Length: 352
Image: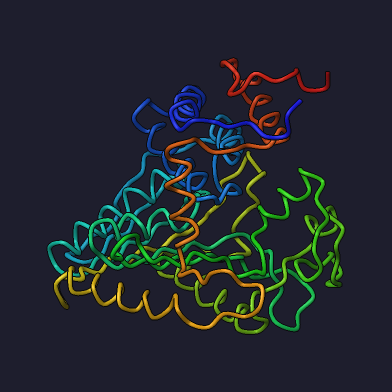
């Protein structure tokens, strides 16, 4: 059997909606969630793509949710209570609110509490960039990183994304605060790939390259004390402003029977309040030209602006579909069987 399967956007979307309509969503809501996941696959960030839907399906047929509610709002701010609902749904509402406020007042800020996994932070920052705005998105997460010098996980691997509209494509930085995201270690374990040194600690705080020890242990903070410090600040922003709670209050993604208490934070800034959008794009284009002719080290064929590699992936995969490994397909097909829907891809039965 082949090791990878090419899945079209339409194929993935129909399958995802079919699954999530069995998991307490209507078709419109399911389409919003699936679009958020597939966007990660299209940008080449497969760790946060369709494979995450199995967690969603199992969580939202186990836990009791409440309607998403806007609990406090001003001209420029919005506080959203997700009601333990789908993080992508609550976050889409929150970022759209921030964008609407930025269109009218120049800046919009939304805070979300009582939420769940929201996919990739880039998705929401790009929502603003596509409207000609500066977009910033972040979320807190469960304790996976020790404080600098500590031996116990306390900090979340809290990602942040910052996006600006560019001339040809948005310039966007989307990064977690560990050397690699936890889901990347999950992927390496699932695929049986060797785990590089420097990615993780075991539960005693010692460096490890063992998959299970890493999954049971902690992540290495990006940039040492700087990454750990940034994690603290993002945890405070996502947890305190919304009165949501901090990383040590956020439960693991695979604990399906209790609320996770994830908090998010979104900012949209209307560029046209500072300068015409076409002027900004021309400035970024000039910056890009200078950036790409900087002398390169031996063996480096090209320099990439943040988001450039993902944009190229997006162009290719939007047209041709995106690959899923055999192991990923088998996991998704297992969920198909569990919920009684047609399999995403026809492969040999699991365990055959």
